[in-house]
Image (tube, rainbow, N blue to C red; front, side):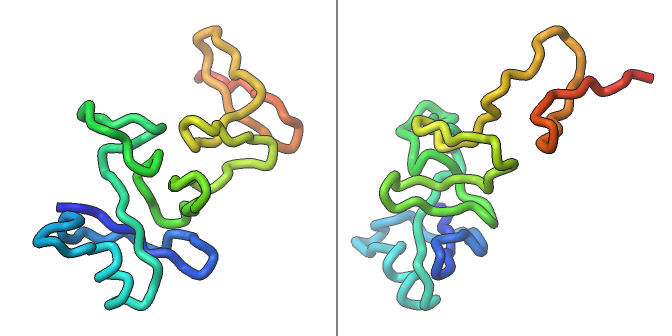
Length: 124
């Protein structure tokens, strides 16, 4: 069983479907689904996150695609939506990272983009 991301004209994932393993029976299922559905289709790996394969296999396209993710042809990678303007893309994982480290003091924090600061969440 394989998963395939359906892309719009801007390479944004509109949905992810379950389908046949690529090259089952000598068929390129990515191309077959693309022809049938009349959209660009790219295979995605359920076990891939941050350019690592959860079962020890070879990571595939950096991240499992989700609705709203973008497909970057140059990186051959699925990239999640950017959470805030200040975040920067980690080229190795193709995940967005906050350039300001969250305090590591055991307290809970929330990022406030407008002031570019981590604010402590009050404990009741």
